[in-house]
Amino acid sequence: MNLRKAVTDRIKELCRENHMSINAMANMCGMPPSTIYSIMKGKSQNPCLNTVYHICLGMNMPLSEFFDSPIFSEYEDI
Image 1 (tube, rainbow, N blue to C red):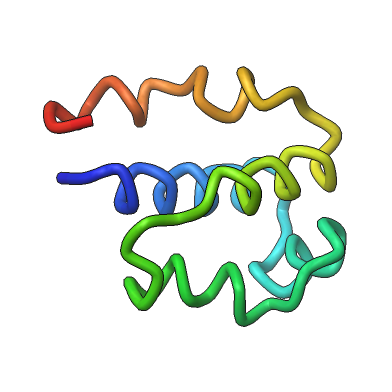
Image 2: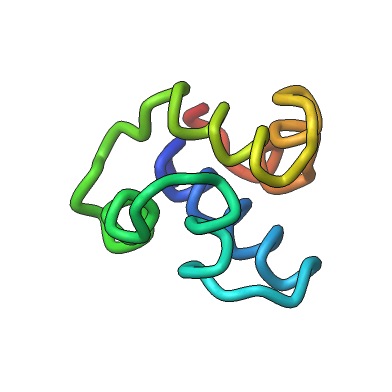
């Protein structure tokens, strides 16, 4: 697995935890849903840290909390 997959899994996890869709998350974060969908569908192979930062701002969480998930320790090539 790679970093893109870990970020994708974390986005899915956050959506589940907050009972929201990808569209709702994107709107909450002030970005077009296509930005998150491009990560989710693998069109964006290298998600920009700035995108992750905006997700964190929208979700009212520090960047460190985004990466403080068991998801990131499951992938050896990160």
